[in-house]
Image 1 (spheres, rainbow, N blue to C red):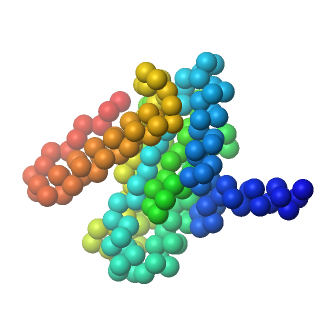
Image 2 (cartoon, one colour):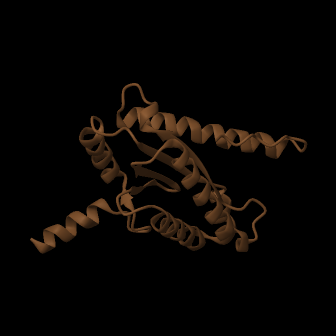
Length: 181
């Protein structure tokens, strides 16, 4: 039984970061929705992408890229609470489920993660250092809550952030975006 439990644990975890993997996400978030939808709608989903990750791999090598992903995993684990869940969904993509969390708190967690990774990337000395783009969606914003709907809204917001950064980088006199409350 212990061996089976160990194998199940390994099957649900990302080997590199120690976070839960995509398979876990596809099981845990729908289970969370089923269990909590009627009792509480306070939860946030953060969809995260590491910007400029490929140039890091191309310049400093895949070992440096793997190390960055491990460190990002550690930052995520140390930033979220024990009752929250963090998943590595693919190469440089992560999803975090923050339970009992409002949209504004989810946005603050998002800003904290981006700031910590920004500090982590400074010593790398790259012209385009890795940073996080994070889309945040509160469960209460969804008319028909489902894993797919939640991921779609968070993903849309992530790409809006990426797009605004790309536009500002190409436009030298761009004005900063107003931060939402």
